[in-house]
Image (cartoon, rainbow, N blue to C red; front, side, top):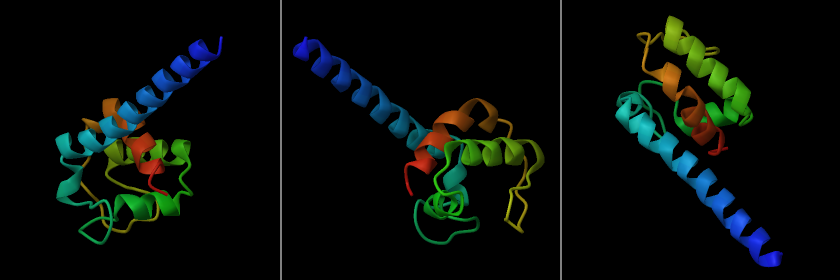
Length: 102
């Protein structure tokens, strides 16, 4: 029984890790890093700053990504960015990754 529990936990951790890595890969693929850095200033706020401002709350980060993808306006950000339609499908894994940076 303990072997099964340990094996299940290992699979769950691996899946969580791949989702986080997937979010990091998606910010590269979706060209988010053209304006956002993981840490430090760039044109837009850094991913760690976004995580800090939202308290690392997954739902808040995901909503901000989805709203911004549609309108180009993000809560608390004065600079607008062009709407990004590709974020709709990628919002959940990107939000999970950003939330993990807090």
